Amino acid sequence: MLKYLKKYWFFALLAPLFMTGEVMMDLIQPRLMSIIIDDGVLGLSNNNVGDLHLVITTGLKMIGFVLFGGFCGVMSGVFGNLCGQNYGNDVRKAAFGRIMSLSFEQTDSFTTGSLITRVTNDVTQLQNLVQQCIRNFVRTFMLFGGGIVSLLLLDMSFGTVVACALPLVILCAVYFLAKANPRFYILQEKLDRVNNVMQENVAGSRVVKAYVREDYEQSRFEKANNDLIGTQLDVLLLFSYMTPIMNIILNAAIAAVIKVGAIRVEAGAASPGNVMAAVTYISQILNAVMRMTMIFQTVSRGVASGKRLSQVRTCNKGRRRRQTLRLQG
Image (cartoon, rainbow, N blue to C red):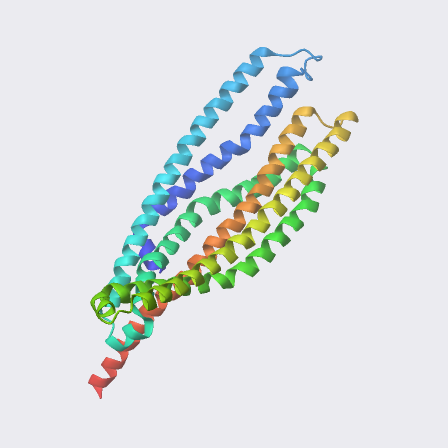
């Protein structure tokens, strides 16, 4: 499937570059806020005398960085959407072309509803995967790595909090992803069933009415739909358990940073501005890990959909290979 992305390499390159600019602006903000608190308000570097001029100039810098970061974010979204939408368009047309060349036997082996799902929903999942990889994936990992570096540059003692909280967050994320990943492929199969029942009833509506089979077909559709809803609820409930657990760890880590920071400030080893910046950085780090789980969820669904689309492609190639062998024979 990567071959369809090559013609949009320029968009795929610009989207993460602009996202890098946005993330850099996000990482600079806590440091500037620390300067405002320590030097502008408390005046720690000027015999405890505040400096209003420093507050104004630093605040204007922050506004400028926010505007530049917003511009980078908008441009990253524009190029990311251009890349993802065009990629999805090409994959969808290629998949439809493959389906049109399938034999009746191959079409029946997939079922019409499954082929509809593969051309629509599965292509959408691949499209979302591309957009996540060139935008959110870059943002998340840069916030994660940049937040850790920025936090350690403030004070190495804050690294202890990260070292304690991070394994818990990663363990929680791995557990829920391992539970959810096998269900995504099942979810697509349930959607196949719903589309298949719907297509059969639309195509054979006259036959259904002629033989008075409305009640039977309605119960068949209801069963397929209930199976789909049940699988979706299983996945959503699983991830609904993850969010509060992650928030508990996040809030506990923030409380630990405040406690460690209070001890360091009292000992004169850290400043209040550094503590506030550390709280922001720890929030960025752990929130990045939480967003990683959502990204890996999209990756899992995209991989499952990619495999399903590859089955259509390889099936068609197998047919052509057999035709070639028969002609040679």
